[in-house]
Length: 263
Figure 1 (cartoon, rainbow, N blue to C red):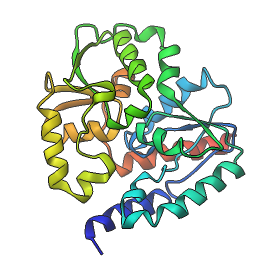
Figure 2: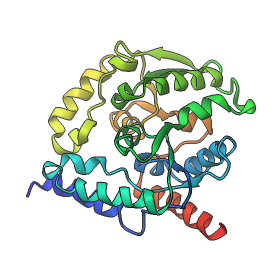
Figure 3: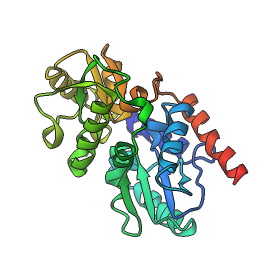
Figure 4: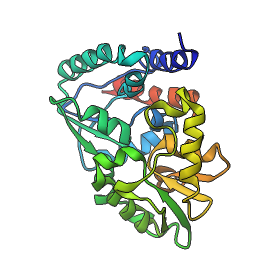
């Protein structure tokens, strides 16, 4: 058994444990994704409350989309996850999923019984008035995560959001649908770290500056772990800083349990 695959498998076992996997029944579901949840309760709660202004009655899920399982043990474990998610959507009457994670967007779009929407479109549409130009004079290099090639409209919504914040967007040489992976695509950094590192070095060489902003929490972590001043768009929007961790994820999940209790 490959120990690197075992690490990813343990991640998936934790993600689908009762500690981390929760859902509120509802037609419309906010699905932040594991990586966004790992940014913590403040960011996920504020995102949820903002989206509810456009989608009243929006429910909430802390489930993982299961994408990591596609890339270990020849994808053998993903079939069970896929079956369980089909059942989850049916039992909870889910029809629309709103997500902030580009990987979740791609993976969940494979489920024909649900419609998957990028939550960035909503944030762009109902951008808070008090947030206009709060970062005027700041400049960030915008890294587009590689799954965005399947949802290129999200790339434009994110640019609109950054412009409204007052951020000067510096473009990588390869951007939007031509973006280059940060090194974590398909669990590459976890399973084949040397290959992942080479891919990151290629991407980093294109950065116009050391200040990076992105809309994938995993990409943010990759740059941060390599000594870049890296932010998630949600950190800029909500004027906060976070570090990805299982503790943060646990605290974010505790929020849905509270919501379930108040429902």
